[in-house]
Length: 161
Image (cartoon, rainbow, N blue to C red; front, side, top):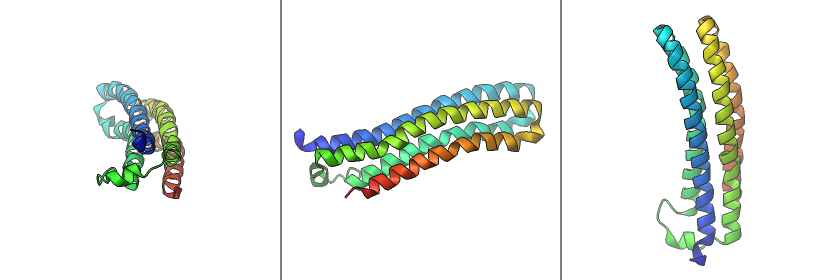
């Protein structure tokens, strides 16, 4: 079992990136959806505008999935390369785990906050639908930090030799 400790740590890192990004996105998309449903109940013509706001916090889940996929491909898990998995030393596995943390933590936190911004944007659309572009920009600004977390995790994964 100890021969797979490094691989286990690496896999745990990828799983955390996917899980935390996905959970944050699911929470945020659900909350925005509830707010959007109230608006669409009153005025169905606003569906397209609030749908965009609901979709935005879902990207962190995709980014977490991407990090997990890139890592699992990098370490040989996807191809089923048992020898490559056995060759991952515990320190290297810990490095892979840490490389996934920016996306795991940054994805979770930014998804929740992007959802909050999108909920506020739904309020803007409810009262002033012509200002929906501004509402989208407010929510999209939070995306910057999810993208930065994604880039740091990608650079860290591919920087491990």
